[in-house]
Length: 237
Image (cartoon, rainbow, N blue to C red):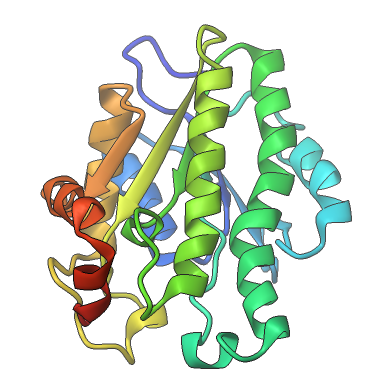
């Protein structure tokens, strides 16, 4: 449970190797020591539990193990892959790997997480979406569609939990400079994991339902959403 000043004390990270997740944990530690449980594919030490987004049959047990030592204040769902768009456009298995990891796997673990938070009566779920969820672009529509599904699910989950003491915060970063994107040229308004973490913390503090990173992407995407399709198709994005 958060302390008397509202500071987060215990965090569960699903997708613990995410650079944004690491940056968030480090940022939270700046305010006060935080007990962290990491869900990772290759557990290596204390505080790490085995989590595989594709192994949906194990997700219930994973959540039970994560909550076994007490209440959790914040759950960050950050597991995801970018995939290879040119391959995924032509290979159904490659496309499904992205969809099943980013969307289906996330939904599979979010349901039991939400139930445990309901039982304890408080907490915040932070879902790492993407600006790509706003409008599927031809350059990455497989990834974008997976995030669009997750984004819509998370918004609906947040609405369903209204009044229960549980908040859902949807995070929509733009292009983030990480190992996953190292081979790609910077996108517009490129940012860093540390900057995204700052936006998440600000969102937690004000109990927001959505944050953009950087924040001005909100206005950029408001325009992009309204572009006529013939014009949108001509954009190199």
